[in-house]
Length: 261
Image (cartoon, rainbow, N blue to C red):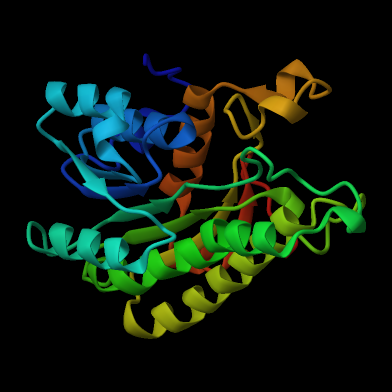
C-alpha cells in the first residue's frame, strides 16, 4: 500500500522505533493500520481471531521482521489475557493500542430496521464484540500503556453510537453497543489518567470505509465521503498523531471534528 502522503512528514515520523498493538488486524482498516505503522518505522503486534487463516497478514509478517501476529478473540477473555502476556514477555511498554474489530452483520445477524427485529442472541454477540471486547483488551493491556513516554489508546467507534447525534433510530444492537463502548472509553480515560499522566484515551469514528462491514449499506454514500482503507488509516493516524493527554476522553470523527457523546 503506497502512502497517500497527505499528512505531514512530522506526523509520519511519530511512531518511528515505537511499539503498536492493533486488535482486529486481519483485513480492512486494521490491516491498513498495520501496514501504515510498519511503513512509519513502528514495531507492530497485530491480532486476529484465527492467525492461521489470516493470509494477508501472515504474508506481510513474512516480509517484515517488525510485525508479530497474535491470536486474540475478543469474545474469549482467556485469549486476550494470553495475548497481553505474550506481548509483555517481549516488551515493557506499548505506545499505541488500537481496538479495531467491530460487528454490524454476520449471516442471520443484521441491523434491526424496527423493534420487532431485535433478537437477544444477536444483542449479546454484538455487545460482546463491539463493547465488551475493547474493554477486556484495555483491562489486560493497560499496564503496558502506562509509562514515562506518550501513549494512546484509541477505540474505533461509530457516529451512530452517539446518543446526541441520533436522528434516525434503528440499528438497535450496533448503536447501543457502540454507545456502551463510548461510555467504557470515557471511564477508561478517567481511571487511567490517575495512573498514567502520559496516556490519552480516545474514541474514533472512521467514516464510511470500503470494508465488508459497510458493503451492504454504502450505495447512497457520496463518493467523496466513501474512503478506501488506506485513506481511512491515514486519517485515523493523523488524529492519533495530534492526540495529547489534554484530548483524553473525547470522541473524534475522521476529519478531526469532535462528536457529541
